[in-house]
Image 1 (cartoon, protein in one colour):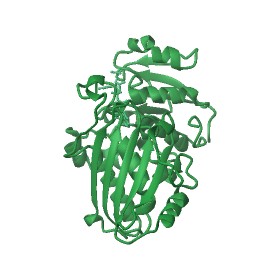
Image 2: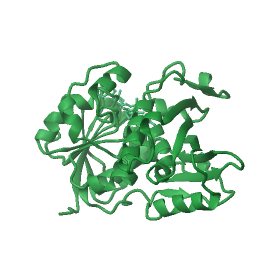
Image 3: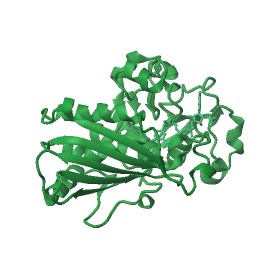
Image 4: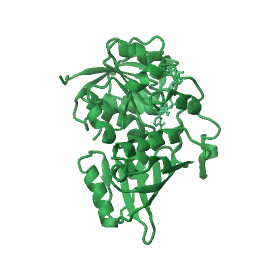
Length: 351
Ligand SMILES: NC(=O)c1ccc[n+]([C@@H]2O[C@H](COP(=O)([O-])OP(=O)(O)OC[C@H]3O[C@@H](n4cnc5c(N)ncnc54)[C@H](OP(=O)(O)O)[C@@H]3O)[C@@H](O)[C@H]2O)c1
């Protein structure tokens, strides 16, 4: 039964994605923000974002995660670094509370792969099988009533949405190269020397070229989709490369994806394939010929803008994707998933 009002908690409310979540949930007509956590709770009332950007009369309980009492909540979002949600998820699930985790704790199905890429042992590997990967355009039908949701990373969201129509049909693919760029908010609010203004402004560079943590996630999901699609692509020989870059701006993510096709596809057929696949998706827009995605047009929006381009006299095609890493790449998508899990209209609080 869909309820009129639902109480939720947000762990990590002062972080970049955590505060975006708080802002979206604050405007959501069915949600009451019940419990927020921060490592130093008294910093929340002093934070101008709370007094200036939220409705007045707003009065949630604010505590540390360790002291938080989520018993009146139906749902808790974790907008915390990896390694945090896995320590709390089991207790909350046992109490019947749904968990939506924006971190990587439950994204990779194989705990050894998690250990390799995140440098820590998984403390709740028994929960990995029940976690649903929260990409609505891929897993919408599994989301209703799900108790544990692993939200996709910001880069994987753009890459998977960029290639989904191709890889789930009979198009044969050899190589996928994802050349991706993100604003500095992708690295979170705790400044490191590489993300402070002086290091980022008027500069552009690649990073993690020998392996970024989102690569195994992209591979896992893409190979999974390919395997479900009647095995028309040889997943063992399917080559996926990913290079992230740091943009000298705060928010926004742009992916240029290059795909080598084994068999030719004409531009018109390609455009039709994408339009048909995403026709009923409220947040994926296929841009018309000549109109290219730009990060400013998806800023603070849950929309993804996509453009597909077949290079002439080449076996390669190019897919351009723009998203807001903090919204469709994180908080907005988490609210979209919450709506689907709890039976609210998918776009409530997001349009
Ligand atoms: N930024 C993005 O574009 C993006 C996109 C998709 C997913 N994500 C994922 O979302 C999560 C949050 O990212 P973010 O960018 O919002 O990070 P962030 O700005 O660094 O915020 C992290 C938040 O977690 C809290 N925190 C840190 N360590 C903690 C601990 N040990 N126990 C409890 N709370 C702790 C911090 O609390 P205090 O503020 O009180 O110190 C802060 O509020 C990460 O797992 C990230 O990978 C981020």
